[in-house]
Length: 457
Ligand SMILES: [Mg+2]
Image (cartoon, rainbow, N blue to C red; front, side):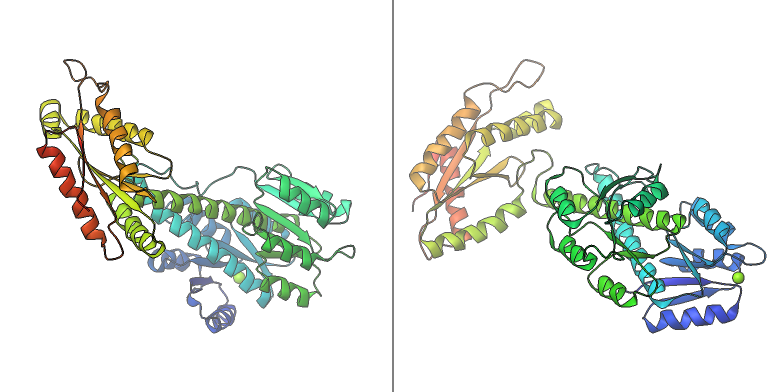
């Protein structure tokens, strides 16, 4: 995971130290030693993350953070505030200014890399989402990405054996997130298996004598229902070994006891947002996959899908010795409809046709729109005689009743011609197969249209 990190600190020694640590882990580092140069550098270098010292002369870290978060061009860049351990007030101001996370000086390596990785992943998800959202918004088919300033409360599940600990988590997150609590892993796992709540974060206390928290984390990471849900663990400062094991396991973040309320809130905010980006991204990928295989006017499969799928089906049918048929369908006299009534009416005719065709084939059959007014129906494991009956049904469903589309002078009669072809044997090819269906279709056209013709085998 490579990312560009801007390190900002008025003390050059601190800058050099962080630069050395981050470079050693193959991050690209840019630096600034004042608030003013930091703002310039963000504009010029577009970092993925900003590590920002709070105490600086002139424009301090809080002010830099406020300005970056107020600018639509930079407000999505994660900011980690670097504060002195005893400056609790700075954290409050940092959170108010929109900081995404905190680190305290002196900076511990595990915590530095954990936070950076977590925020880099979040940034990459949001970048991907922004990129996709922009292109699909143009098509007007996918809702815009989740708002960066999403403030809906997150759904959090906290698991620990002590009610007092769970109460503290609830109090820390009160008003910001909805927290459910569970006292033991068995109850929690049973609950997760049956609940309709989509949790966006699970908090597990590793510092817990009553159950094995690491084991619970590994179970959560392997269950289908919870593997994508981020996990935040709570550890004691001296438990470095279990912390490293948990991070290896894919735990998303950790917090050290005693819990700082603001730190917990910042960590939870980040993980909840990340959860939402992932989910939105998953939905967008799904929607764009559907877009890639379907025709937007009719919702039928497109030519690309038809060709890919049919290539596979031809191979499969030949190797298993199964029949396979296709229908080549063309609308009769479609051009005059478009020319006379315009493309809007033409489009409505195509939509109505698509729906009649879909209703008259079987569930296993696939109706594809392969050209302007050309359709192909794929009929898996179907011999040519059965295919002919289905073709007749499609033809009749189109011609039997007029299309209820306003064309000025009432409704229209639309008909289709259909050519039927069956796979001819082990030496048949996709090209020959489709060509025979087309030839049968031309025969149907020549025979007077509104009819079905079988291809010669
Ligand atoms: Mg300073």
